[in-house]
Image 1 (cartoon, helix red, strand yellow):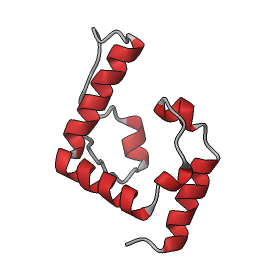
Image 2 (cartoon, rainbow, N blue to C red):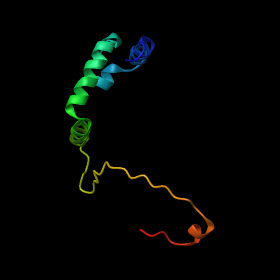
Image 3 (tube, rainbow, N blue to C red):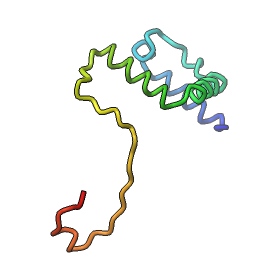
Amino acid sequence: MLPLLRYFKIVQFIAEQDTELLFGMEVDSHSFNDDALGNALDRIHKKDTHKLFTEVSLKATQVFGLDLTSCNFDTTSVNVWATMTRANLTQRPHI
């Protein structure tokens, strides 16, 4: 659980935002209390973050009319480690 000070900073942060622009309606910053945030995080976890990301992304494409004809939706990542030497710099990479 986060210390109360951090929750206070979230309330303070929201108080400085244009909530009507963010949420489509004015929202009291105190609505972002520890219970509300905890419930929201629980719901996000139950939904599955990948599914939520997909749904939000697709909704954004509809709302903003984005062209998806050349869209790559690969959200995986690959980590690569290497040790560079002078020989590596003169050779073409093997892909």
